[in-house]
Image (cartoon, rainbow, N blue to C red; front, side, top):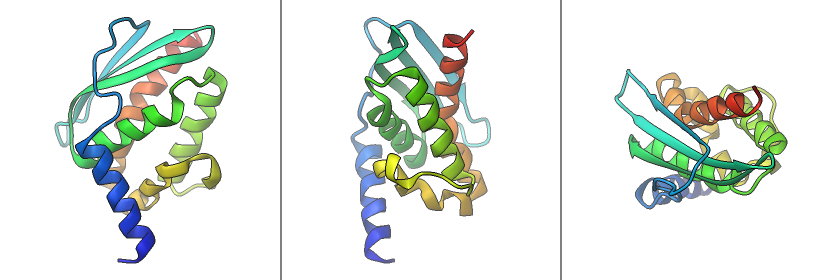
Length: 142
């Protein structure tokens, strides 16, 4: 394992063991619950959206290291962000996971998940919190 892979592994483990935003928001405008039936991961994502901005976002639930770290890092990457930019971040992350062209510079530490595309069953784990976010974005854009 090279130094970059070791760093990515360390980042993922840190977020899985000490996830950011692991709480139920006191006040929220959107809530989505998703479950990966293949592995049992289950998350609820809460978002407080005001003036087309994600003011606060959090999650609770049970999941593997990949899904929990992905949720934590997703929250870090979009907290306080305008909806239009959140949609770009979702698309960029999804492109990376699916081995499509993406902007590495805008993802920050999320590039730690770049190699997930080599493990199709783990792609679902990494995308689970993002699918919840996609549902929230769809509600906002209705």
